[in-house]
Image (cartoon, helix red, strand yellow):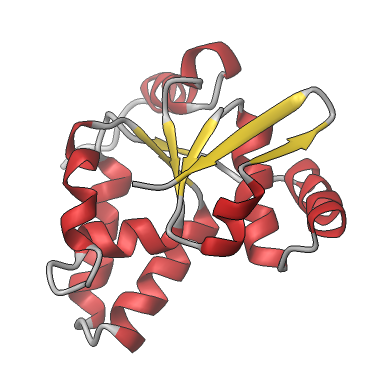
Length: 160
């Protein structure tokens, strides 16, 4: 396979970068929902069928937590978990969000303000920083919050 020309790779990168106005329609997805969607044996798998029609937003924390859960808890083969997660990331409908120094700082603020663990706060910060307005989770602690704000931005936490 030929490598894309430098300008083509840049165009692809720019097309997939988060843009607040464009990406508001994406649904932020928490790790527990992604795992339930991917694993047919998960007790909440049936609740996730609607996600097949959704454009979702993911970030490194969600992807790596999902890998860990699929391999070490759900007993998937590591190669299978990696392959499936790479397919999710590659899906053009889905948005993959990078994490930055700003995301990390926002996450620390969210953790303190909402009494959250670091990973949950980082996931929320990533969605907030990218303009994602809704996040789906099965985590009762997050669902109870309903909405998390940071500055002028807010993300509503829903369940399915």
